[in-house]
Each structure stands twice: as C-alpha cells, then as structure tokens.
Image (cartoon, rainbow, N blue to C red; front, side, top):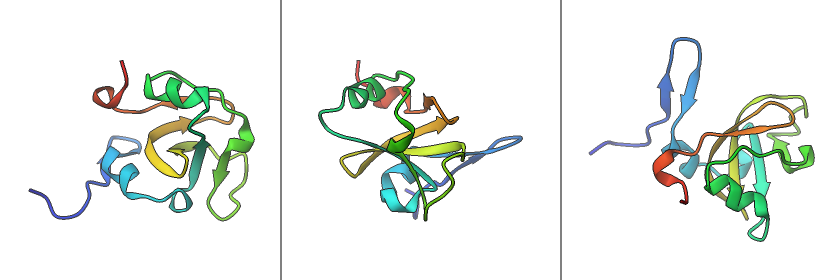
Length: 103
C-alpha cells in the first residue's frame, strides 16, 4: 500500500510521469493537453497504442502556453484523462502503458 500518487520516475536525463499521475489530473492542470471527443477516431487509435497526428488546435497549453511547446501531454477523452503522449508540435507519440491498450 502506498500513500498518495506515484508521480513518475526520474531517468538519467528526464522525468517520466506515471499513469497514476495522469489519472489524478484534470485537463486544466497539465502543461499540455490533447482533447479528444468520444466519436473521434483518434480516441480509438490512441487506445490501440498508435501514434497520432492531431490538429495543433486540439492541443492546449496551461494558462495559454505557447503553441510551440513540446513534451509530455495529457490525453483526455471528453474531459477525462486517459494517459500520456509526447507532443513534438505535429505528432503525438503514444505513451499509454501496454497493459492499458485496447487489443
């Protein structure tokens, strides 16, 4: 048993946020957030573990963060967090844990 959330782990050169942290955040609490709708084909593709190329306007930043920000992005489905991806400005690399993916 553990008190609180596992925030993630520090690797040699970066911090990798955990799935537990993603599930505990609200969309407006993440520096970057990709908003998907329930009827959006990209939502199914994300759950299957595929890389996405969403329209840049679907990725929002905390407090009007610059649109050129890159990095860990919270992926949300109709306002509910699903997991993480890494945004590079045009592509979102899927970081959903393999055990959470839809087969």
